[in-house]
Image (tube, rainbow, N blue to C red; front, side, top):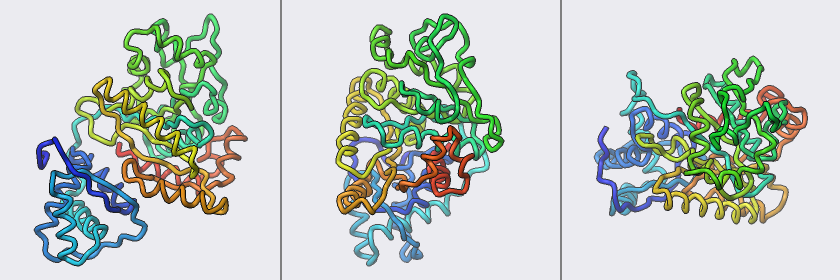
Length: 382
């Protein structure tokens, strides 16, 4: 489908949308070969021509924003006021009508690159490993072929899934060696499979290695180091639908290579690959998020690339911790770019699964934690 208006200066419309409508819009736009912003623009323009659209349930709507051509946000608001409906209701009506007019196509889409997601935050201890592992498990359970890469030098993901780090020895190659270009063997040889029946042999892990702490120093000597991870993982991409990176809890060249890997590639649709950031409802997480965002923006400017923010996950939330915690959570939820994909409670199942070195969906498949991971997996339109 054609883009409804030329790209260029655009104005932001901030309102709210229910998680279900946002998810359906993202998936349906992808199915029709459109960016989600283009689909929203189509929807709003079509909504103008319908005089009395039916009311749509908007319970649970969360802050959401989209960019429209100049003047369009004001026109939308003026139309909502004239029709005596809230902006949230007007948008819900427009999106619902667009979804009804654009059912899932029966013909297959043009092939897209493998979906690549990094779960990243500069701050440690916010649940990156928990989120990346859970999303990967849920995607594999749903039938996707998934590779999860333990890119954190601390190697928590590898141990929590019941495996051991790769030891840098004379006869053992590592991910860093493939990134440097010194490896001689096939990178497939590094992979291990999770053997639980629910994953159907579709979930594989590239374990951490004990030389990962050397990456920043080693990569500084590699030509075009930002693309080092992409060069290493390229032989694996045809085997998977999704590659999930459990990111390092630090900034630097190591993070640059991971961020560059999830950039939007030529011909790839927006919001398909990119960054998911777990945060806590505290000020420290706000500061860490700003640092990561600045690094992403600097890399995009320097490399003339686009890296999409897929969303935030407020993790380990417990309202009993006081007013400031609730206020910080509300502040996150008011964010429209990136938006909050989920608020996950501070529950015991995740910790127990990690301590027992058992995948969460195997340890507690019916838990609130497990269902939260399934919901997050649905956010990835693949």
